[in-house]
Image (cartoon, rainbow, N blue to C red; front, top):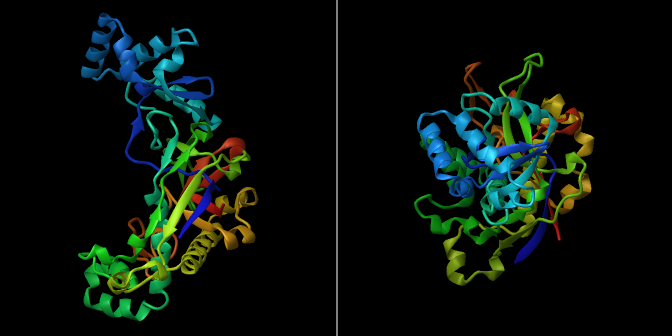
Length: 363
């Protein structure tokens, strides 16, 4: 059975690979970051300028190389510029002036973490694997805190150094060497396309309890606009397909020891992620401060899927309830429930918001 959902980010979401925009990859045009088609610009440069660019890059002089590319774009008539642009993204006021100062420095600085994009349209690609991974964590947590709890504790006591693997194998009733028996093979989540116009570049810092408000080193990243921005959400649809027991052949029923239906999927996500959201709000005042502008209602939680996706979701949203075994290196003690740090994204009006909270609303 396939169901359709609208993706509604509640707080900023950054789904990142390792791609970084260096200063020579973009220019700042007012409150907009313009990502350039550097290869197209290099092809259009005069042979002399192209050789100059290559010499500067080879010598590690990035500031002059950046100026060659940026000046070419700036000197173009406005009607010609789009041919040399990949996309445009608004820059939040907290990041704008700092990036201007950083890109003016001679050393390599001013990098911006990029979202995965469709190279032809500039739209953001939200991989279905990010959503499926969140659902998987919730289902594992439900199983090992319910029907599979005793079985896991017995298996883990015999393999103390392989608890993470045993956790999932026990929860889903399969061996990692026999992935054909993994019941989440029956769950498929489509990729989604997020409009390029609904993206911002903002500043994020690590907030630590008890640090007296001292600033940590900021990072700059592209992120999806969200409910807390006070803007109308764009259309972004995700389809989730789940083959339930009635749709399986007799051979498939024998292959999978554990099966899930839609009711269990909704129940698992509700129990796990609502618990994580409440724990985060209780622990961090910064999370509670603007909660009225984005916190999901009880009705939304009851009818949709509350998830946490992307980067900066933190240890407690990526590990199962009751069996967390994180480690606080500074205090030299284990983390059993929730840590003392949160990566917070700065948005308009001085808001500082946690990353990754999304709602999937049934269509």
